[in-house]
Length: 325
Image: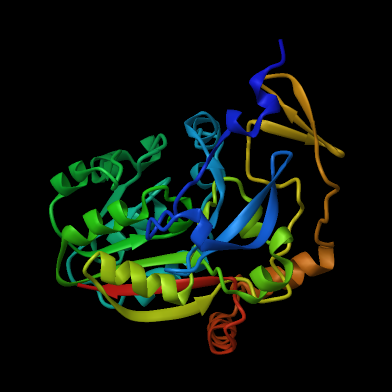
């Protein structure tokens, strides 16, 4: 008997509706497609709210194999420069902060050192034994569940590299908005669906080829989302990797439980070989330039100048959004 892995339905489910506004997929248009394992998956853009989303998204079987202790965000330290810059952009500490999708909890710990009353929450919370006496600051909860309200109220909620993973966008944002104090802010970033790279080289866009990245916001979808959850858009900042950078190796789909060998994708658990497209890796020179342009620069002043240029030119592949209650 053939194993069901031969069907895309073994690891993915097909969407019938937009994950933000619930409009049927027939009300969306195909923008581009990306390789997901060995299947081509369409990236659709909703005609109603403008959100970009994958027609096929990973099911629970695949998600449990992605969000393991080997998951990148659960193993690797976040770049210190990025943490410091993010904390500075929050402004002066003025109360309680919740970092949703906190992963290893480094942002929470740094924000606490900076003077915030920091807390972390993640539906796939990894082992945070390294946090020691601060372990009580972290909670394993899904914001799509009303149980998130048991954490109390916060002056600021952050979501770094989270929005693109969500299956239940309105529920998550509405529940988080409900635990914001009046005039509180919800700050999140997202791969930018209307970025230059998504329009020019979407099939090779690193943010889209990652299997767990299933939706990509635009300025229009942000305004729709804010209105839906009772918040106002205070600011949208354009950031991330500037075009023409941001292309990736097609085999780098962010799945630690699969091994890639030449032009084959090997399912370690099932022992199946899956044909894949050839890779398009960045050269070492491009990697160096990309590293410099994404803010990993020893000179802090130069780093900030680069960020301002990316924002002004709207050339980055991410947006950072500040919503206010």
